[in-house]
Image 1: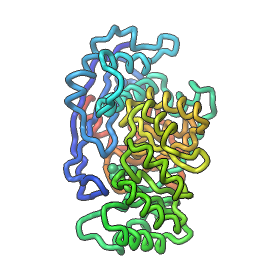
Image 2 (image 1 turned 180 degrees about the horizontal axis):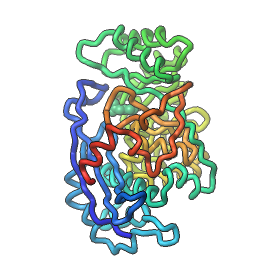
Image 3 (image 1 turned 135 degrees about the vertical axis):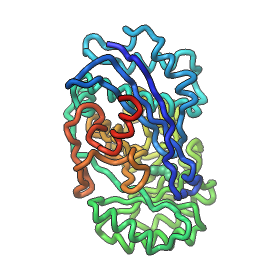
Length: 387
Ligand SMILES: O=C([O-])CC(=O)C(=O)O
Ligand SMILES: [Mg+2]
């Protein structure tokens, strides 16, 4: 059993939206394929992966370093003979040869993207859905029904509150019970008006989360907290810089409701610092680490270990990114749910065809691997890369 090729292509996922920090007019993503010499059901097994929105494609790093390390590693070091499939931990170690610790930068995105493809291939070779393989390895029962929430509510050029309300209404019509909107890209009083418009629209049918994308300094984060705490929000996300743990910890004193952060922390060491110093509360707050940006599931398993050491349950994790990889982790390892972007970042985000959101949950179909083959628009671009 061998990995015979690793391919990457950088694709546009541009759209005219803006959060408090960046616009997505030039956003790209890496699509990767890990090609094996194994056949299942009459087809060569190819694992696929891509990075989440918000960070750019990683073609340079993948082509200059990580691809060759996989292809040049002793093939036996990449295989789990006993399990009869690839060894994602061995492949991860090969990719990280000659990489110093710390300063995670964006190599974590390159490795996370390849790691997704490796797990897809690993589960396909085992002829199982990834969530079932993960649950078996951890000795727990899989839970195929997964909570999902609808992320959107971006700033668009010329957009008014009526359009924002209509967007949120459309999520409720599609079965979601939690919706998310952006804040911090407009003055506080304007954001407050937008929030009240959305709350009036969703009423008791759903809850609202708000996301500042790390925009605020301490004073502004507190001013928003004091405004936001009068509303029954699902969470207040990424108020300040993702690495400013003191800012986050200070917010807990003024904001009693749930807070969320972690999508821009890319390693178990950063996650540990958040839990050590960030004042996050395991009884109500949410952790959003996204394996596709942070060295993949091999590293995410280490993050879950750190959570355990600090008394956190995996059920407090709702990853960023809206991809099927995190849906599998949620169903296999007992996370609290997953993000979803019903109208954005297609064809990468979303669910296999025919999967519907009901009462804020989806049920995972029984597809081998991550399940990309069940999403026709996505598997089409994937197969153009490698089959
Ligand atoms: O707008 C973005 O960069 C995406 C984001 O923060 C989220 O999905 O939580
Ligand atoms: Mg966010």
